[in-house]
Length: 88
Image (cartoon, rainbow, N blue to C red; front, side, top):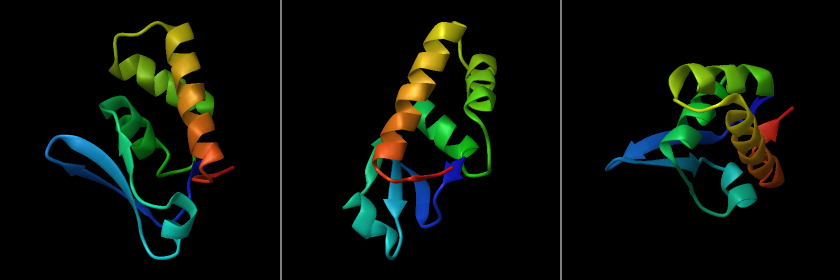
């Protein structure tokens, strides 16, 4: 899975925002603000990856246990899916 084409991640004054470009704007209706962990996962999704790969990367980058990393990554991915931002 990966982020659909037409979205760019920017860091603005310490905050991360995903900005739609062109026609992608219709699907999102604006921009999406992300936490630092959300931005980390977004960057991983800029290339084709799996949920397991994301969990492993989060475990390597942050001090978190595996059940929490798996639950939070899954919840974030579901939000992206619901917004129509993922290509499976």
